[in-house]
Image (cartoon, rainbow, N blue to C red; front, side, top):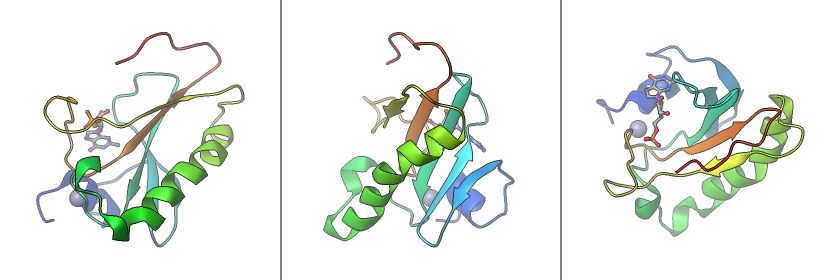
Length: 113
Ligand code: 5GP
Ligand code: ZN
């Protein structure tokens, strides 16, 4: 998707502070952190929203969820973190390339919707 910010980050056309990368996924720090630790994990494939994921996306979405804990610990979340996926207009999604927010730090984050 040529007009997608996150596809441009995957392609290296827009810089990002990388947390992790492999052939299927990329994790990078959010440009506007909402917590002391705030990064995003995305599939390299352009999937607009969680509601657009299909059966063929099960491996990559599973990989994102199962690597989240390891990356969160690596970034300093030693006692838990929040995992948020905003979907569509009602979900207040801003960037239409599916992403999992990981938010954490030392202190409980309180309610964050
Ligand atoms: P959403 O509301 O779609 O779930 O969240 C999109 C997130 O992407 C926001 O937290 C926003 O700060 C982040 N974001 C938007 N543009 C960029 C960018 O160019 N680089 C990075 N690193 N994060 C971005
Ligand atoms: Zn994209």
